[in-house]
Length: 83
Image 1 (cartoon, rainbow, N blue to C red):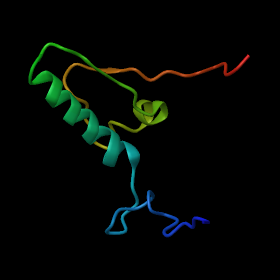
Image 2 (spheres, helix red, strand yellow):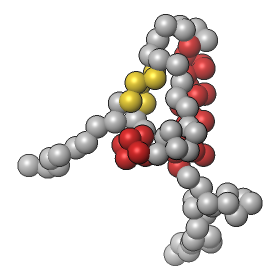
Image 3 (cartoon, rainbow, N blue to C red):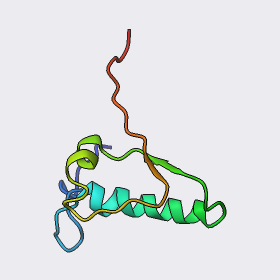
Image 4 (cartoon, rainbow, N blue to C red):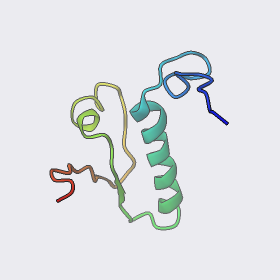
């Protein structure tokens, strides 16, 4: 049975039709929820999370994005794939 795409832009905009920004709408809320859950048990623990590198470097402050307490940017680049 063939599959078909019902809504091409399903992951590109919200139900209200607003364009989705992964850092603002997905990553940062998730980072905060994880940090709150972990730090409610161990407030001294750090949160290692991998934000999209260019967003973290260039846009976070300009978008008003904040990071959880004890947040460590664990972004990395893979320079060699395969052999």
